[in-house]
Image 1: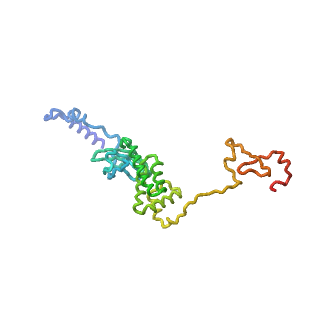
Image 2: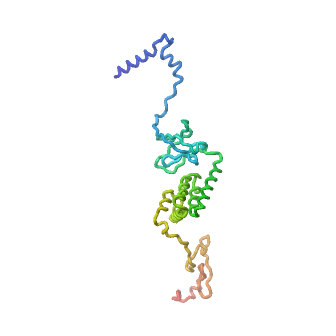
Length: 274
């Protein structure tokens, strides 16, 4: 095998260096003088196989792949874009022209936003405020609990449009099930600690046969109790705030009375608690 390879190498070298009368030069001379300078360097990494799909660019300038979101230029909002998914990148194309590229997030991650600030409009803040205010006003027409849920999803986040799809989905439930059931389901979810519920959780609560029988939380009213002491009974330095003993020997409500050692000595044994 080694002798065969050496023979092929020598034969190829002799063939390329052979002078050609038609061109006035050898193949090697033409390659070195004309073709070699047009060659591109070998890629540093191998070719990556990709999967193609179509995705619509949402109003928040992001497309969705699996459970994560990737930005594209705002001028393509509402358009259907071509997306190439590889093991390491997400490439977005419009009319066969690549308009965005992002590092792919692991499929195990959810709700991550890969945003290029240059893809967003210059007056993004005004657009965000308009969209957020419109959503909150629409939720307020349903009820205070729905308004609280929508306001939390839109304001208590790092990205103003992070849960825009979720809020739109929750508000769409109004047309399917009515404002009364939507408001009641939001009220129950808030009582159970769901400040940022998903659309499926809200819809599941609406469909629950026990929705109207869910107990309503009543406000806790604490009656005055002279045996309980609050923080006002203590100084900030940690020392007790003592009061005085009434003439009848009782302690004033809400404070601790300090009895002098003389009072304790003058009190006969066994008289405590009488």
